[in-house]
Image (cartoon, rainbow, N blue to C red):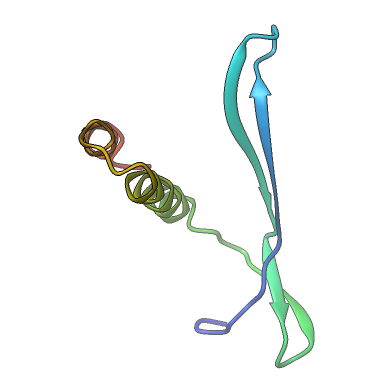
Length: 89
């Protein structure tokens, strides 16, 4: 199974409030536990998903996008602080 190109699926929802109505933006993400193999034309179920890697990769993409989009020294400092404070994503 290693090395196969699978096309997975996901649903991401931006939730802008908390349980008691306070402003608390955050994301909810559902992801498939496998993917479609176009070459074999079948679904491949994965027994294991590397959640630690997914957390770190998500953090890297999100914070790098913030740094590139806003391009201020304050954002650079905030992004650096987030990477230091949350090394596991």
